[in-house]
Length: 180
Image (cartoon, rainbow, N blue to C red):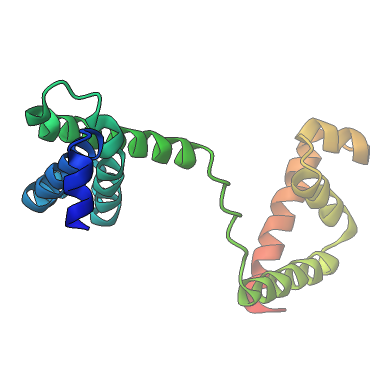
């Protein structure tokens, strides 16, 4: 293999490519860790930082031909690492912005059972109220009607609605607390 390189080196083309790979290998050996540290500070993730640096090194042979001064290869790599880190951060921002919303927490079965028991207790307590109190309470709080609307619906005065509602709330509290 050495003979082939020497023979091809006289042509001048393979020699430059070989020199580029050797130079990139030396830069890798001498500066890989510092480039990973740089990327890690930027992307705040060592694994991603290693990928960024690796991508910069993989692209380096193609860029080597464009470098006017091969001594600036390390500067080029640093800038490439910074640019690739910025791309990673932009990508994260877009992904985070467009991430699907998490479904709302589903209540546990225990929560559902307690809610069902509470509903049953309230319905049972409502059934124990006198008709006018039950109607006033249901229209006011479950129907979400104003006192004036309840009065119109029941055909009574607003004062009577207040009275029936207050008595119903007191009775409900007693029934629910003491289980009459």
